[in-house]
Length: 209
Image (cartoon, rainbow, N blue to C red; front, side):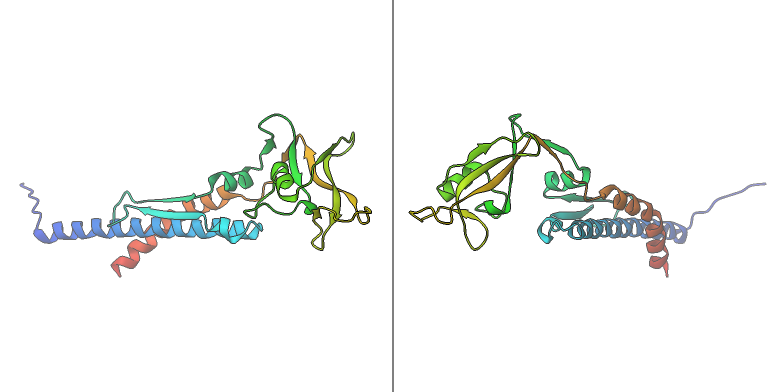
């Protein structure tokens, strides 16, 4: 008995079409998974009250950038990895010099760029000297002699009689601070990974209908 296998052009074309469908399905699935993870991470960040600007630092990209592939992949990352990573892990923060961390109070105001102000910047901008006050219980202080303006910030007192002049705590001094964990990025990443097989199947079937 002789058995022959005749691969007709139609079978070859069908196999090629199936590979093409697979490439489209995998690429579409990775694009959906990457976009979904980006959206989930952005939602976590805004939900934690960390602001739209930090949320928008989350980006995604599907590879290959052009065309389809059975080896398609998606990359989701942050353009501010240090900040996002800190809120994701809740690290213990210490001063680089091994001294104090200066935590500004409301009376300190904001920095020039809208961020946290440092003791050196505060003295330059306010024209006041900070004085160290050691406390055995609770954080030590950096205080200034001045007055409080309508915004509750310490400024130079212009009164010659000293009227309205008060000692204002400007910075709290602590040896270290534990940043609270406000994000759980791994949770959403695992969900995105688990969704990939279903997305591939759904896109493959949809492409054949």
